[in-house]
Length: 121
Image (cartoon, rainbow, N blue to C red; front, side):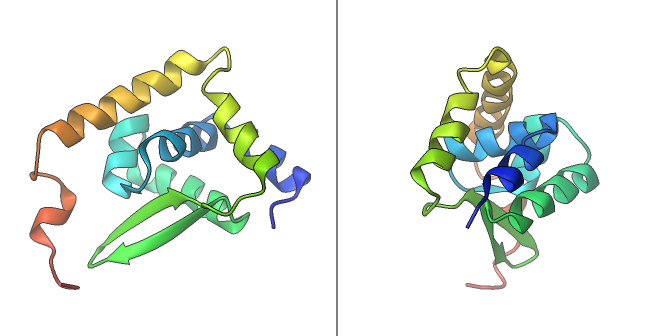
């Protein structure tokens, strides 16, 4: 269960807010999509995703060599409301820009990370 201290501590970093808002708006995304969305190095994104996972805001699913993240569906309503409200925050244009980058990447079709890895199918 996410506590107030956990939530606001993890949301104190811009990269974690951006990742969480992307997952809120886009659903499940591969790490490569998240890296492109926030335009940060993969190691930085993975470190921040680990922090979000540690406080149980997101869950991960491995598919072959790729890891997919999504916002937990069973968050307390007040936690989900805080996350949803971030899109309306003064920095909302940053989140919208991140989402546009992910949408552009996904529009390119099946040339993304998971097309060459079907080891779990």
